[in-house]
Image (cartoon, one colour):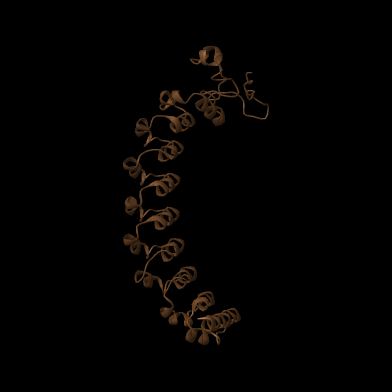
Amino acid sequence: MTTAAPPVPRWSADEPPCVDWLGRPLDCAACSNTAMKAAGKCQPGVSCVFDRYARRIDRFFRWNPGLANDYLEHPYFEVRAVASRSADVFRLVGLMHDPDETVRLHVALRVPQRLLAQLAADPDREVRIRVAHRLDAGLLGEMMGDPDYFVRKLVAQRLPLPLLPRMATDPDREVRRVVAGRLPMPALLALRHDPEVDVRRAVVQRLPAALLDDTATDPAWEVRWEAAQRAPAPLARRLLADDEAEVRDAAQARLEALDKEACHG
């Protein structure tokens, strides 16, 4: 018993018209892929490499992945971008400096590490973000000074620890907060007096308890509250006199927890 093939989707009136990338009506009779249409490999309004609509281009290459190499120099960027997903990897070198960032973004997903590093200085931030996600951590040092804060934040999340102290003075607080969440001691101490509250809180969460005394006088109650969560008994008793009720409550809860630990220790 044979199973019927699933119905092929057809064009509907709420989709974009069937025109080429220059807005001209598509002429299947003059198309070089006429034989493919007869074989069901392309279909007007559904799957067409010459259509302007990216979804139809994508369906064409999903049905015909072996043709991707033939369209890497097509004048329409959507065709080059979609074709790059299934083209041979060694053919992508020519697209690394494509004038359209969408194409380069797809290339950054597939090229090997030795080529990916060349995209670390791409003019488009989205491409560099993709590079920062994929690039081998040992090669991320070149991206520590990227002009975009989000790229640097990704770098800080993955950079090898020996290089991370160099990002402790990053101009963006979000980047420094990530750094504070990873820096080992004693390098972490460099951020103890950071001007941003969120960064100092991240530091206090990871400082050895014996080094939390200075935080009792931090100007931000959020930092003092964070310290109270992990404070040794002497510091917790000092924080019972804090100006903020939240800090005092946290200090009281910490002392009670320490008493329980002592009773069961």
